Length: 346
Ligand SMILES: Cc1cc2nc3c(=O)[nH]c(=O)nc-3n(C[C@H](O)[C@H](O)[C@H](O)COP(=O)(O)O)c2cc1C
Image 1: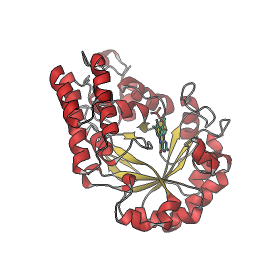
Image 2 (image 1 turned 135 degrees about the vertical axis):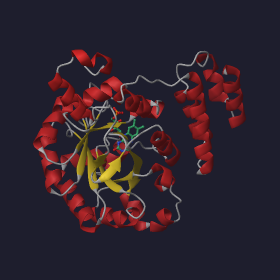
Image 3 (image 1 turned 45 degrees about the horizontal axis):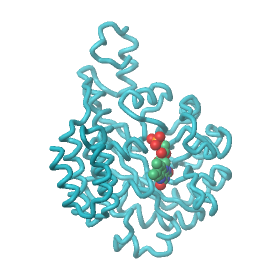
Image 4 (image 1 turned 90 degrees about the vertical axis):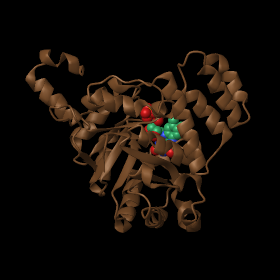
């Protein structure tokens, strides 16, 4: 259905529908689009991922073509009590830079007042605020934050109202379909009414964790029920599944988490696909991506050997001969050793 080379055989209605869905003009170029009033170059976004969506990684995904990147979750209470941690740029996750703009900062917590104070601090540096109402991690749920908020949607409303009362930037929320059962439409309606500018929906309940498949029909029901933009999230693994999620949910935007974590090339793959081209990284591009990432970590003074080793393995998956060198990569103690392993492959 999305094969542009076969377009002659596709009927006219279908073509126009698909072009509309993909927001491309007849020459196949993507039209400028906006998300919450902010220009985005692609309608696929990098998900907030704790210990993954760091500044160097976000910049890399941006360079690969992500339309918008999200920070990992940041503790609203911590920022509200120790703002100097933010202003002095000491917390790993709240550094930002020009190259990654626009960026959405994600806050987590339970106290509406803390969210408001934190917003006043972080919104000076970020283009958008997002509330984490979807993380099912025990540590978070125990204190009533993340996905626990899905059990008390009125609390989400209060948090949103507090943030909206101080914020000059778009405010969004990220939810799952519900805690144990699908209550997505009900929760989304409350969030819209409270003034959210957009909503990101991961198509699973909190209790599901990552089991089963993301429920795209449930995301579509939310999309059909409310007027603010919905970002569909869950199980995008390649360009084809990226197109499918938009088609099946009727959403204009998609978000990618786990696949981007191991394969940041996914954004370029999708963007090229939308231009009618098939693109996958060559072995050389995969290795170069690792060195580009290393250069970014150096630039932002965020070098962590364990993280570099992980990226070295993730980015170069599928290259001939890399499997045999996995142990050597894991055991390497310096960047020089990692470099040497890649030299051998070249
Ligand atoms: C390592 C990891 C960390 C995550 N951290 C966050 C987080 O900080 N905030 C959040 O809202 N979701 C977090 N998520 C969930 C993702 O943002 C995303 O909703 C989920 O992985 C589903 O998308 P996917 O199928 O594309 O991975 C995390 C996921 C992973 C794998």
